[in-house]
Image (cartoon, rainbow, N blue to C red; front, top):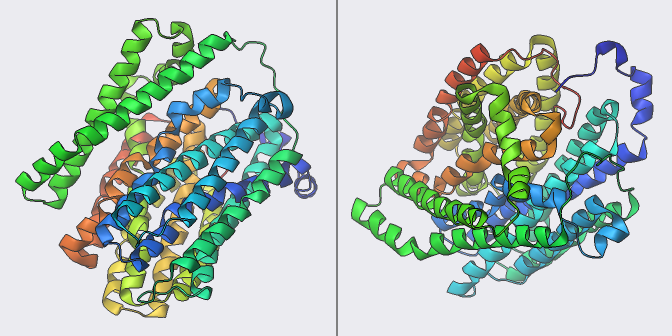
Length: 526
């Protein structure tokens, strides 16, 4: 991707004026809509489950419900190609899919609201299914918003649209994080005094906040795009494409759950060690995914789908990336993408449980983490963007990797200090400042790797890969804490970030990235 030449960039006065552009403002509200679901799967749900008496290791397994964000590249091409019956004619292809995703998000949150995880054994299964639906719907919304942002404005507006989107996203996270915790406490649920009704009302209110996104979708304009060079297929081809995707997904689910007992037996034989359990779970996942891909491939070979359509949909975006960088460099870059955020994501899965175990109240956690922490992360993003612009992306990417690994050690001091508010704010501030700085450089890095011919799909691949392994490992964070204690866990999250430093160094030797931190296109630093 090429960046806008400095001479063509709008001046400060023009940039401020363009902030009032309806498309730029619309991205703020779409960002808010995108920021609501994630914490309702992660931290807020974690505290709800803990108050309901669910064991810590089971709580962290729920983070896997957000794995849809790590696999959205699989159905991103479908969203890009398939029309929604009736709605596409009325709203256009982007707004139609946005509305479907937002309504699905509201339905999933309402389903969660009407399940009491403390009622019986099956309630946890039903809660997990509702959380998976929420993750899938939210990931779909992210795909569509990203595509809408790319298509709805010229390159000169992309940075402003990304900035307002991120601002809205962060505020949405505050509402779903701090807001949900405040509401649950206000309605009468606390650690040791669980009140299901309080959490039910809280999640119903969270579902209602998604109306912001629905109203925005109904009022914005459908982007006008030139699709002259795009290959169109018959309606039957699209239906078969969806069928193949559904059969492949069903194969993965069936294999994964069918061999669950077998892998559980292997874990018992192996003695239940955390590392062994993790490796067996990775093997479990790879086996199910491999068989699902094999089934999909066989269906294509057998002629169940238009082969050219299958290639255009799933293979071409990946092949383009490998053609441009070569096999060795491409694999190195994919390894870096998959591991760069590993330390802070694994820590983030259990951070709220850690704060609660130290003795902090929900209100204290909400204020420190979900309000103070969010604004510090925004400041870190601005700092990262400025530094990356001044010194280059790879240098700040390296700085972010080093600081991300080192920042984990501050939590050891917090673990020893106990319920000390000063130490809590120091740890949260440092963690979020570093995360914001690293994210700014990382998004610029991902943007530089993306081809303008496959922007939406390739960025979906990168952002999916970015969270896949960290979330898989994060599901075992409760078990690691049970085995090592919190100080040992934070040493672990620091050490797993060390290889990232080497990967950044190797990637820096192979790549020559422009010093401009915010290339034109679809992303901006945060």
